[in-house]
Length: 426
Image (cartoon, rainbow, N blue to C red; front, side, top):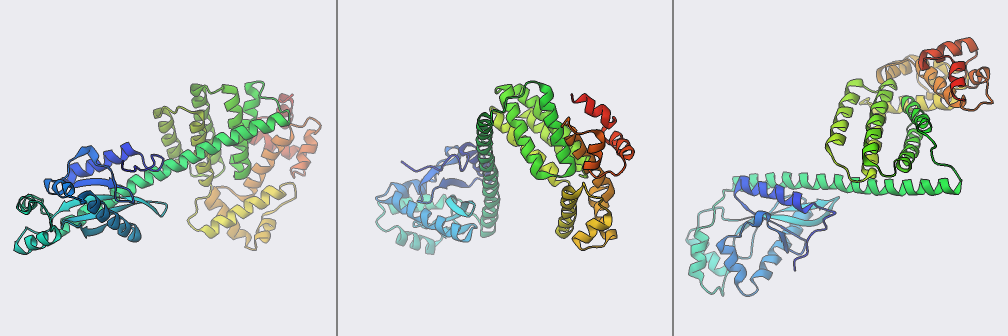
């Protein structure tokens, strides 16, 4: 029984569909083999030529064909490109390797053709290669019926098949990564639930608690704090998982909401609005169009898009510039409570204040002081959750020297005064 490929590595149905389309477009025989030369798929069950069927019917014929395929597959894998060869019976065939992360799992065999019209010298060679055949005259007649494919057409077909196979492999690698990420998501949720049980942390009592954590996530996204954004998102998804008890429709609605809110937070944090809105449109189309059967798949998708949004907040082509802006943001995040100036940040990075200011405007579409103010306000919102802190204490804790100025800035960003916001929490 031929050994097939692991369906986790290649989707058999997708493989057959694509190879079948290649056959329909070229008319060439095609089959998929494993590393031992065993055929595990002939798309559409297209039959081999009468020549090949007769060769395989001879004593040891199948084994000789498998040995030819095995050697060709090894050569194709070694060079990682199509490999042309003549099989033991004299036909022209080429092998296209199937490589998953640099490891060969088989090949696609194509051809079983001639490159020139049969002549006297060909038949002499054919007889020599197939000594011991029961009926050589019949084999000779079958050889005359084989398709003649020019070298240039053969090369073009091999190149086209190479592109098709690489497309199939790339698609399946993405699927493998998605499967692994989904499994990891399941483990993370289970681990967090266990941790909450150990610490006696209660589940969410109402939707207001969920929204509070959601707002925290959006603050971290606006500040570009990837670590805390990812941690908060994971905790938020665990809450969603336990609260919805696997209700896919509710999960879907919440995920779409979260993607929209995250996209706006990313734009407010400096990401390009046109690009982010395009990503959001594609995300919504995928979520609405796909009927996911597990909540973890939705969770994987939202984690991926939020990570993409965060990456979109650093879009400079020059990696050196990206590093400078990121280092400046990190320094501000760590020292926002101090009386920071543009000169302080620039001096820490050993660059001129004007150069740093220009990079901030180009990358984040805001000044350094604008970003510092945004961080301070976001941190103030976090501190206000602790009832023991007064507005004056919060103002001082986040680096504002003047309480009235703090109230003015807070209202500009949040929409209400600090005192009004604080009173709404209790």
